[in-house]
Each structure stands twice: as C-alpha cells, then as structure tokens.
Image (tube, rainbow, N blue to C red; front, side, top):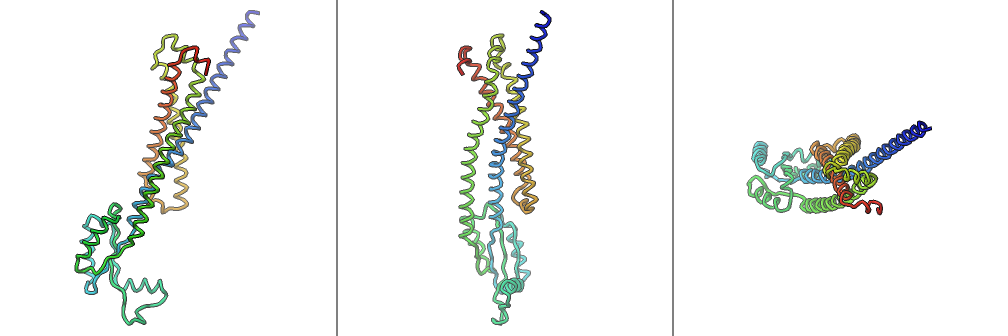
Length: 304
C-alpha cells in the first residue's frame, strides 16, 4: 500500500514537472512570436527611413540642369567643356546633346520636323548636367548657375527650380513622419515585449523567492532569465530578418529597378538594427522584470 502511494506521488510529481515545462515552453514561444512581430514593424520603419534617404538622393541626382551652348561652339569645344565640368565637385553626370540630335528628338516627339517650315534648325546644342545629391538644392544651384553663366561658351542655364523645391520639401516631411513613427513604435514595442516578459517572470516569482531564501545572489537568479531573453531576442531577430528579406525579394521580383534605391547597405543596416534591438529589448526587459520581483517581500507576492 505504501509502495502504491509512493508510486502515485512520483507519477504525480513527474506529471506536474511535464506540465510546468510545457507551460514555460509555451510562454517562451509566445514571447518569441510577439517579439518577432514587433521586430518586423521596427525593421520596416528602419528600412523605410534608409530607403527614403536613398530615394531622396536618387530623385535629386536625376534632376537635370540644361546648359545651353552658343552656336559658335564646336563639338570638340563642347567635349572639352564636358571634361572641365566633370572635374567640378558638383557634377555627377554630363550628356552632350548636339543640335542635330535635339532636332531629331523633337521631331520624333512632335511628329513633324520644325526645320521644314522654319527653314533652319531652331535648337541649340546643350549639356544635360546631373548634380550630386548634396548640391541639388536652391542655395547650391544659385552659385553653380552663376559659375556656368560666366563661361563664354554658355548662353543660358535652365532648371526646374519649383520641382526641386517641392522634392526637397516633400522628402523632409516624409523623413519627419518616419522619425516620429520610429520613436512611437519603439516605445510601443518596448511596452509590448516588457509586458510579455513580465508575465513569464511572474509565473516563476515564487521560484525566484525560494532561490533568494537559499542564499542565491541577484546576479545568479537573473542569469537564466537573461539567457532565455537573449536567445529569444536572437531567434526573433533572425525570424524577423527572414520575413523582411522575403518581402524585399518580392519587391525585387516585381520591380527590378528598385536596386537603385534599395542597396545592400540598406539591407545590412536594417538587419543589424533588428538583431541589436531584439537582443537589447529582451535582455533589458528580463533584467527589469526580474529585479521587480527580487525587490518584493514574500507577502506581497500573493497580492499580485
């Protein structure tokens, strides 16, 4: 009879341990899923900020400044002027468009040849100048235009000033919105992960108190929770990177030209930010949550 009771007790304890392990495992999985979702959102914000910066440079560098040349400028003179401009710090790309090429392009665009009823080619040779991104703003363009107009081979310089201003203003607004969204999402994500971690630590508050009673130091008690937090953070970050990578790959397949905006540097910085944030937020939340219960008195553990 005594042996049967002992066997029943051992079996019951074994079943309780399995139930406890299963419950703790489910908590870890829940924490991993919730952290992964948070990191995906944060990764999207980081990716959007970096992509917006690249998009800003891309748009600026494709705004064209048209440099009109005098009729007396030969093709060789025009090419020499191109070489001189290439040595200027603001020049990114220069294309020479001859009078004949301009006439051909306009004839194709309008469907008729203007020289047939004018009796002459009304177009002039031009240089299509594309600036580096940091020079594509109103202040820089003013002194660049003044410098170009001082050249005797240049008759006029034209560019879409209003378009450039609108591009800069809109990109500044987008950057501000993304920054505010990043700060807000960081706060919300911390609260979500912190609550999930606290629930997991809460279920083991009595174990923490028991370890304190037998003389375990705070650092010793925190170590396993911090270890689990780091593992969860790393696994969640890797899962988030896989999801984000799959999304970027789908974008590439849909529009291959996005490689001009979405560079490998953007992807690397986004992945690094996701991994670092995943490790920091889970370990920090674990540290704070365990300390919260370590500071509590035994009678207070039953009141929460």
